[in-house]
Image 1 (tube, one colour):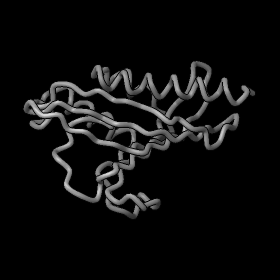
Image 2 (cartoon, rainbow, N blue to C red):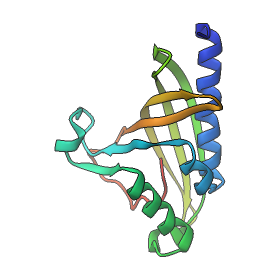
Image 3 (cartoon, helix red, strand yellow):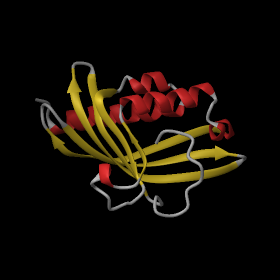
Image 4 (cartoon, rainbow, N blue to C red):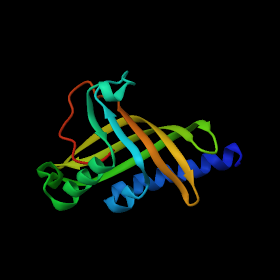
Amino acid sequence: MKNYTELLNDVTAFIWQEADLLDHKAYQSWLDLWADSGLYIVPAELKADDYENSLNLALDDADMRRMRVARLESGESVSAKSTLNTVRMVSRVRLLEGGENLVIARCAQTLNEMRHGKLVTYPADIEYRLRPVADGFRIERKVVKLLHAESFLRTVSFIF
């Protein structure tokens, strides 16, 4: 078992890697970070915790993640054409649980998007449930709680 600092460093590096893959549109490599049973969740209500029975902007299993990536890569998503670049800034990575079979971490992320010449920012609190594997981790669950999920959101044409 790793000590707290080693585990925190490994989890932080994993989260940074995920952000980098998404910013550089390496979606197939991003899909490889996921466990087959993993869920990508973006709730529409900040206080929601029963995601299957709440309104969500995304509640993606493996098939839905692959379809989301296919739309982004194919250009079928009209809104994706107007998104040129994103830059994610991740901070405040904190381990909530660090077991041999499950690691739970929480962090802050600000996603910055350039759309039609205007900068749009999406701050979020993200919780990861990670399964340790030989080469790092696989994402079992990622919950992205957008700070302004309950107010006006522009067309979201990327993965948080």
